[in-house]
Image 1 (cartoon, rainbow, N blue to C red):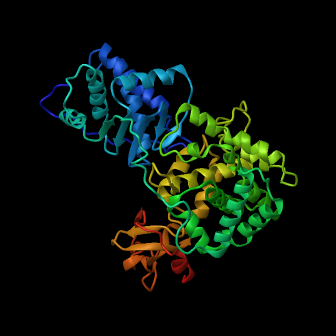
Image 2: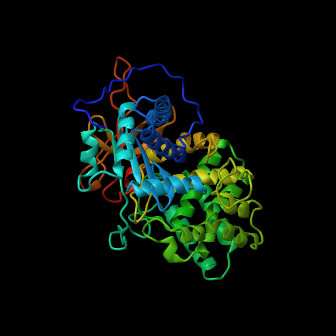
Image 3: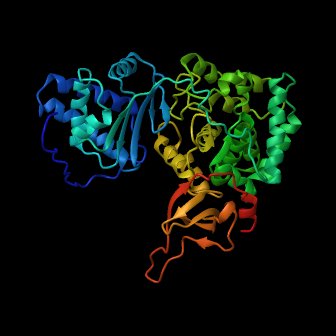
Length: 478
């Protein structure tokens, strides 16, 4: 695209119907659209109806996504398409062809920020058509800027030996822990070590952990704060399992489960990842994306888990089922391949808790997501991968700013969420964070309104703490 004047970037605002509650962007289809539009751009003159129609389709999908998120991130990592950091695995020749075509251009990522116009998308596809024959040396961002593309960036993944670059996170929660939470972690670590070493599973210990989670951990503000907020430690399997079990219990409580169903849910969630005891540690702890062989090996943990649990006499009947199904979408997709069988409700509950917990936990190759970022991903997956009713129940239970979250208000106050308001989920009560990460006396209720009825302050964003906080100090005083 050669022009001495910037393209007309004005956009007429037209009313649009409310988004279907279950609409979710298909990133593979969007990548396919970009590749198709690139080809059409090379085949037909500008303004051809085929180009106009395909451009409109892509722009519509992009704008619908950007109504709910500040940025749309499309990435191809080791052959898998990712949307906003979440992998959408689809096998097939079409996807492989798309990946090859973009890789030949040196493009692995397309990131589109809010404010992008249809004209910019059109200019981008013209640039992609010309890219293969473009002279080397000019930075891509400079080339895009010359075409007045300011809200879209392209990226290329460069293979690295990430071992020396991997961030070192603690192997377990640090700082003072809620006593019941600390006990549940210790007992679960011992249980997983016993299974891994071939000593078998102590059913009495499992029942003790489940009772501890139900009676104490799920009702402890300090424990929930340490589970719900950003976790600055490597999410080892036993930590992840305790956290997922507790989060699953919160969903069960929101749904009104009776004691028997609650106990069954707690046990199944606690043991959902027991199959990882058969996965080599170097694969479990690999700092970076897994290759195809390693991914297949990792996916076997669901089958391994079911095999382990079926042989343990006295477990609840659904515990092996949840281990087998927790990576299957409620629409029937996912792994392991079970045709189109819909996973059991308990498996669907654990899936919601599993995704949230995995996103908010640290990885050597990935910063943890903030709670509201994780909730937004759950919302995008609702209706396809996840059960919409269960996502709503979870978000209602934990809120976008859960206990223990570090937040900044629109007055630039930094504080820790110490209580949530069920009727005002976006306006929690916070305790101000002082020097050396200590609590400042007093609290601020962000749901307070001034005489005109307007809120006195809003939570502007969640923050990642620079160091672990003593949440017992913050939450015990509330």
